[in-house]
Image (cartoon, rainbow, N blue to C red; front, side, top):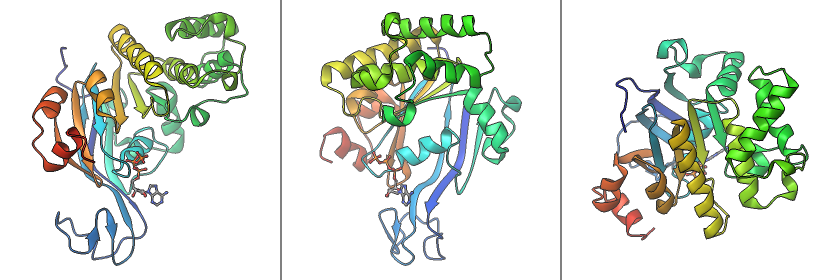
Length: 283
Ligand SMILES: Nc1ncnc2c1ncn2[C@@H]1O[C@H](COP(=O)(O)OP(=O)(O)OP(=O)(O)O)[C@@H](O)[C@H]1O
């Protein structure tokens, strides 16, 4: 894969706390005696993400792996601009030449970025789709948000997208609630791709699916990535998903990045004790 020199996305000094914080837990020391995991024993604030820094390059698939509670969902919600970080910077190369911290933008600008620059597939299709709209209607909603107005063009684009995710176009008028879990995830993927975002966020997208259905969804993601060269961030607790999809991986533990590197290297020769436990399935 050829990576351009300039990252598509930069995250700097990203922090998210739930709670007020206190002088005991705001210390940046790694071995803070007032902390139990990511929770402050004094004020009970949870530091869900602490000092995260990373870049994502054009066409790259970056994995973020960690056990339950390590901060993955908190991070991805902020990357999709649905949640304010406590502190931090996010730069998107295609917006203001990558010079504006988008966390500080107005809500209107954040909506613009969600509609034009970002796509998100939620672990729960009930959060990502309107279950009572038709599948085509779900895609049309995203197309309208991305400034499409011509009905014929929207129908054509919805058909094209459903074909891409292997949903029969004949089922375009059916609501996702009548679909299987794997089909619902595929409708979510087609909706997320509708505005041709340069960056797609995938949050635990195979959770709750049968193994064979999981394999089909993962295959589809790979095919789409190869065809469209869209950059992706894949959040998962499942190393087989990370192994199958990603080029590079960040390992999150209690809100901090404890290891990062090429996925193959991390899986074959993990350096950090936590990654070693994760890789050897001891967590
Ligand atoms: N709204 C909230 N209020 C308080 N604490 C929260 C809130 N949301 C998340 N947390 C805490 O932040 C930490 C990180 O949670 P997060 O959901 O980001 O983890 P995760 O890695 O995505 O876990 P999972 O895989 O189980 O979804 C956890 O300790 C969680 O309890």
